[in-house]
Image (cartoon, rainbow, N blue to C red; front, side, top):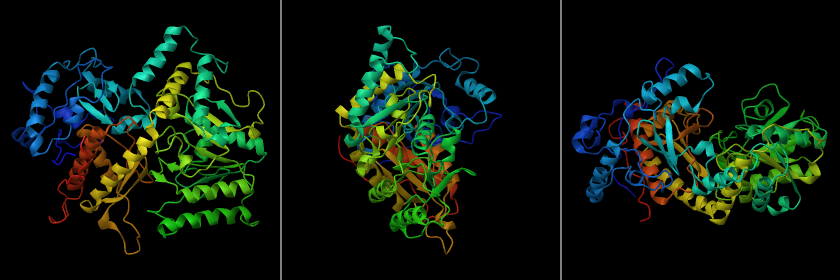
Length: 564
């Protein structure tokens, strides 16, 4: 574990504006010296604490555990000599970076021109590009290289899509094999050897009770279409129309999926309280899960509740966009009993939690719950678009064509997905995610003692959230401090300036989310923690200048980790 403050660039990012597309501040202010990019401030130049961010001139298929990943956080005193030697070696590679405006960077003003044209041409609905103004040109594993020559540790992973990180060799080989074979790439829903192999591998990973009696529907290539298919399926099978969903849910952006999500209005959905021990709707912390389950039972059994027996219940075992909120296992089992006793199909959305993300291959396995329908997407396509639902055969009441789509037969995605599912299963990456995730959560919780703005650290496996709060704004009746979305945004920008990509989520976008690939090494995890800790301290110092000196954070380090 590194024990010194990270100052890689040291610049705070600024908000994105439409008139002038934002560029990572460290890249925008960076100048070059004979030894590579200079530190972003005079103090950094004087102390030599800036971490170089060279471009990788090696074969893109080489390992992502390169020197610039290992040395991203500045080392402690004992290791400074080695870090200096490593930095000098990296300087030569950095000098080989293409000049601004090269063909690789897009011309027309280089990557800044690309960002400007995106701002002018793309819709106002774009999201990630606003807070992450980078132009990726190469990627491998955890690492993304931008057109500006900087390298970033990617803890967004395509919103959880990249279980094996960027361009994993087994994925590339699987795609190449299909391309070289001459097989058709577009086949609608026809049977192919590639589809058969994918289905067989997927069924091998499912809970046995479901796999033994399952049907699969290939949907349009996005998870939201799979949600639509699941809702259509249970409504067709039951002849009922209502739906039970949960506060804080996120199931996609199409009409039916939005109806089941947390911000919906004027829909055929009954909203139930999702258990949340930190911001418990009942004000009783963990005991709120029992109250929420009791309320659900009462709502369904009370003839005057206004809720008729629904077509199904849809839930997430870990709410991701809702703020990384894991459902207690006992509560999950209670929901299974409630629905089974009343012949209500249980639909579990595993779009983001699946394929080892939470420390089990599927998040429902933590509780032993076997749902009636599982909604799967993201990682099952091995980084390419693919979405399916898997469900009990008794529900298969559809007529031919009841749910269709032109792009149901994505052969490349199926091949990449088969390789990914097999690799995760054969190499125990789900178990690895559980072990490493617990370690990361423990070290992140250690930051709370020195950072009162850290309200809660939670998650499961490598699906982690840090909720930031304003401790000085809590009222006398507040059980926990209010969320601090502006501080969370500042932390995200400080992370980006230090070469770390994170995302925000939660009710008020005050939860910093970490979704690294399952292939992240202990060494890389240490680099992520150090960059995050330094960004948190910098954002807090800038965002809360009124704190007394005695309380002002000084970029403390996380607890030392195991040697490697």
